[in-house]
Length: 593
Image (cartoon, rainbow, N blue to C red; front, side, top):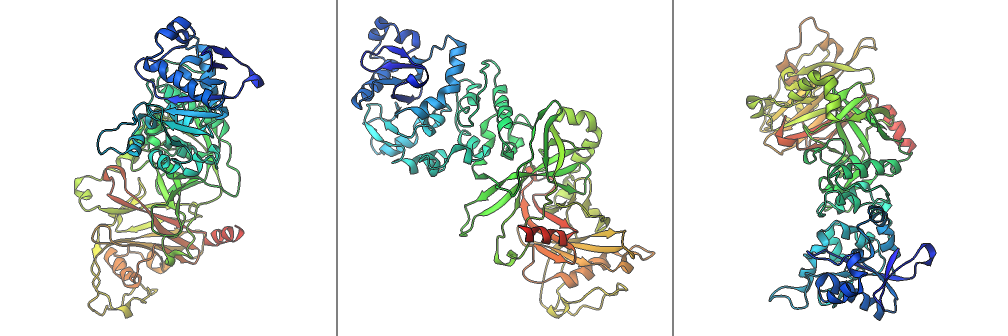
């Protein structure tokens, strides 16, 4: 390690434990900076001493000398950048050098002691270029003692004193700024989000400036462009089991398996590690793609599954005392355990884990199986080349066409977080509203039942007869339908209905209920009349408020998760309807927690 002797300005070299205490400078580069070759030439150093690139080095040395330190380190003059080997070693050591420094001076060349009228000094600090550069992220986080100085080298404050301001500007947890929490206690997505709005002059440096943030070492290959950021993620995978590295928006990224830039993790600050009851299964890159094992949520489509990641999104913007958590699910397209990440209808789904209201307190909100499936996530070109024609059919299902779309403000995505337990879909009413190839049920048939409250308790008769409905002033307008599932392994076959309804207008209530379906009704020689079925179900399902969760026998339906599909396809708002057919097993698992 090379250090500047603050008395003589000569550069000296130290190794290992012989490195003395030193100050270190953090700054943004200007158009002309001092170099190692220029600084080590005494004549050149004296001739250029008053130029900005040299004067800030001299000022840092003077400040260190005033604080009783004998040495200082400045990146521009302590690294011989003409040596690629030395440059690589220095960049891989940079975080450690800032961490071990006795003090770090932050020189803000764009913050002056003499601001224009009506400009607050703290506002100037808040908008300093220093907060937008990639390299200054680790330079801010590593040192325990960091001090800000203006262009005139006037003290502005310490990192600890300005922690609230820094947290607001950078989005970094104030606890982390105070170094009361280790970097590795934050998810990969959170740390990527810290760099999301930062820039570097060279594209490779967007990866290299994060090596210390992730405690990674890797060779430098200037000229590889954005491939450097992909290499960084591959290196992170070797030492981390954090799935949040996959929690970026594929619609914002040039790549689907790995992100091309930290900017696609802009919302990653809300993604926290999920401290589960068991260790995460190992995952790694192979020549077939990313080999990984997670719980998989099935859908009605043979080409679409949801991978449940080991990280949670925390919503702390609500007014409740308790934060709302959602587990992140990764939509995947493919077949035979070979998948690619989806861009349509959405690249990530946040599935609710916490009850948003008191009425849901007794609900089992996490219905996902604990059983993990081994599979591969590969690149689009590899998966599409094998299943291209089939995938086209599945993905084109999201485009319903203008005539259908005009009525499709909202719909349900049908999911089975524990598989179907021997059940299969028997029928849908109305059948035209089920889009099985994409696992969406988008009700477009509305009803205005005007039901009397005494009529709500009506149950289906075994013969399917519907008693006449008394009328009252109790209006309801809703798009609704029912999915009927059959278990053929019982004698007689067991049928169960899932009633799904969306109250108009847009953004109004929705509900999901489990409805017993008499076998005699489904096994009639002639198919049941759709209107008869729907009107009968309407009679026994309306109450206030509409629940998002229902349990009947061994069947659970939960519809507490909503998301907005990209581009409004296949509908503008989607509610995820999770259906479970083994409620007893879910209850046993909950009791074991």
